[in-house]
Structure formats: C-alpha cells, structure tokens
Length: 363
Image 1 (cartoon, helix red, strand yellow):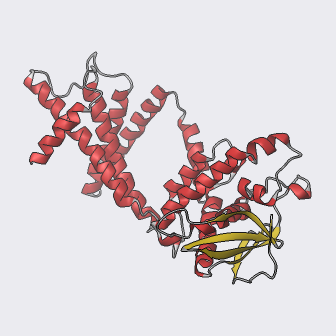
Image 2 (spheres, helix red, strand yellow; image 1 turned 90 degrees about the vertical axis):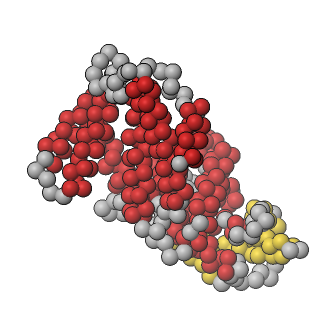
Image 3 (spheres, rainbow, N blue to C red; image 1 turned 135 degrees about the horizontal axis):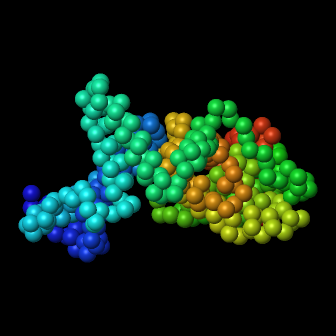
C-alpha cells in the first residue's frame, strides 16, 4: 500500500514526541485514546438515534488520528528492533511514572473487551476487578477522588436526563416589573421584499423593534427569522440578553447584572450560540422530526456560556429551548412570517398565521 508508506513518512515529520525518552509510551497512550474515541463515536451514533448528523465526519477524523498513532508506534517498534532494543519495555527506569498506570488500565480494558467478545467467560469477573484496581491507581496518581468524579458524573447525567423535569427559577423574579422579561407577549414577524432579497421586521406593540434582518448568506436559509431562537431562550431558559436589549428590560437596578449578564458581551455570546446551533440544525432539516439534540452539542453550549447565569440551567432545558425554537422557526419560514406568542409561566411558545398591520411606526 503505497499510500500508507507515504502517509507514514509524512506523519514522522509531524511527530513532536520523537525526541523524548518516553516516546514509545506516549504514542502507545495516544493509540489507546484514539481507539476509545472511535468506540465513543459509534456509541454516540447509536445513543442519539438520528440526532447526530456529524457522525461520519467525526469518525473519519478519529480514524485518521488513530492511524497517525498507529504508524508512529509501528515505526518506533521497528526502530527499536533495528537497534537491538526490546520492542516493549514493561519495567525499568525509563518507564514513565504517570503514563505507565494509564497504559496498564488500557491493557486491562482491552482484556475485558476480548472476554466480552468471547461471550460468557469465567475470567471476566477477575478481569473487571483488575480494571478497578488499575483505575484506583490512575486516580490516585492524578490526585482525583473517584467519589468526587462519580458525583460530578451524576450531576451531568441528571442535567441531561432528570428523573423529574423541574424548570430552574426565572433569574429576574425579584426584579422590578419593568426589568423582568415580559411573562406574556405577542410579537409579529413581518417579511418584506427588497429587490431579490427577503428581509424580516419584528413588531411589538405596533412598533418596529430591532433592525431589519436578512439571511446574510448567498444561499437563503431563513436565518432572517433567527430572533425566534432568542424568544425560545427567554421562555425555556428564562435568559436572553438579546431580548432584554430588544424590549428594553435590562436590570438597571442591579449594576452587576446590568453590566455582566445583560451587557454587550452576553449579547454576543447568545448570538454565537444561536449561530452554532443553526449550523448544526441545517444538517438536520432544522430538527424536523427530531425529538432530541445530540449530547455533544448541548455540552458545547454549556462550555460556551460558562461564567454567565445561564450556566445554572440544566441541559434538558437547553434541549427544549432548541427543539421548540426550531418548531416555531419552521412555521415562520413557511408562513412566511406570523405572530409568535409566549407565556413564561406555562413555558409555551406558539405561532399564529400572519396578520398584516394597519399602521407601523419605526423606533
């Protein structure tokens, strides 16, 4: 396979580990990690049941990464044999103190996988005990409590799949009424043509709020209606710096909230989240027929909003905000336009057919 030889040569030029004394252990650890990543991608594809459109792209990437570590490990072993060195040194002064236990853990996992593939095996229970013993060593060397890790894992799982869904309290419950996101509201999306370009105006209380919005892309995709995602954030998360700006309900009586939670940077963060989710939604027909959002996307959003109040919102509320927001988005695209009503008390976002205005004033 000429391509493999060419690839191996190119991979050698990008190996930043090769001049290190623990090179063999590092590439072996990398190979183990990438094997796990391949299995993880296959697991995600099964778990997400059609809600994971980037599966093939991710798997191509993970297989490529695995191949890099594989050819580098082959080259390192060949080099050791040519130089009269043992291909693998299990013990000795060059054995890395931290990577060694991790490799032992990987080896133990590999043994369990082998036994699982064989079916019922009397050795399986002993092999599982070996994994536990090696896991304890890895955690101890890293200074991490397995109990702490288990509690963090439970919190993450319950954020995504809670036994009972209870909405997080609204962030502005104690604010003056004029600084609260309106609990009940009707907004109208008015689509207008300007030449060959469609644009959307947003009307509230017979006044135009915000800017005229187009898709801002050559291939029209309906992003001109993306304000509905901010409305979904307001309804299902109780959070939207963009809505607070549009409706002029920033928390001015609380200088810290006004600057940090309702300020320009928070607006940018929310717009970025909307754009990131939109790029994924386009791959999934804007979540038509979807009943879940892939877990990796939800976790990425949580990382993105870290440090802001919305970081307290569990993942299941984010999923609801996305799916409900895109349900109404699809209706707005087909309208075109229409009225959107929301009820924060009941956590409802609904669409009604367009109703043309008699008189529109711009602000």
